[in-house]
Image (cartoon, rainbow, N blue to C red):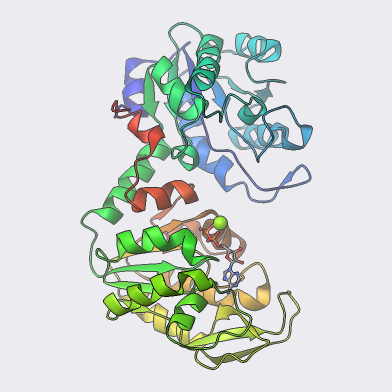
Length: 400
Ligand code: ADP
Ligand code: MG
């Protein structure tokens, strides 16, 4: 797969480069609450501008319904990008219309323009190949003859969408630094990872992660389970889980996994239970086999955190996806903090995947450089680890 360095060595001065980035940040009104994805997109943009390219960024924000909706404007992202780059980023008022044309035509060498939310156009996510291709053709025409396409939005490469997949067939296409780095890291996790190889999974639902659990179990030495999904495992062992998150329909699957992998799967031995789902709920720590009716487990307990920490500190490779508890409530963030801290303290090659897990690292104030890699693409990394093909990567490899 051709990458950004190949493009740079071809020379990009004065050339237009369309970059698909993942700038889908969480917003509170028009304030960005976590700019991780904007910052992750900077290196590729900065390399292109330093080489004199005219950079045209395309990205989505939220889930607008295929038509313009001011609530999902990329304006806050354009401002933040400009601040971080130290030079203004021109935001087009539309995607491929008159405003976009004028904005792109006004670009100077080394300048950056951002097109308005690509999901304001219903063709972006259309299931109809011809509709997507027509948007891809419009994007290619917008940047014009001699342009190139850089795919840098790892968080969307599992989507067969116009700005991810189809446009890569209309323009010479290159993997951006972010996509390349992500794919390399994920290859390590599915290939020959340094041992012992430990995976920590948490988050809310077992059903979301069953594919990953099944794909990774044969490859790992230890699988540590926390978060909401732990209660389905505890229930599968025959324990009461009170009003904790429970997926009854997954108990049979979970039982089978436990039976086949007793030596690998590590479950919490204690949990922090609450009398309701709230930041100021009454809470206490109980043994994992002693959750009373009316109480819900919202975090793993200190003995579990220490049990997990021992495994993590000695690991050669760690993959972590899914918070160990409801870390958004400070009273239930200690398990997640403890896991993250022991990964930071370990010498392992460590990868964090999942939007909420990456957000937890930042909001709990852990050093991002304490991890070897923090993935920007939750869904995409999980699909890759499940062994699924990612259309946005396949197309860059020339086999789609
Ligand atoms: P990621 O985005 O990292 O893949 P998920 O989306 O699977 O993670 O899960 C994140 C969510 O799981 C968080 O919002 C967190 O509050 C929730 N969660 C973690 N533990 C529990 C629990 N014990 N009960 C309910 N929700 C939980
Ligand atoms: Mg999530």
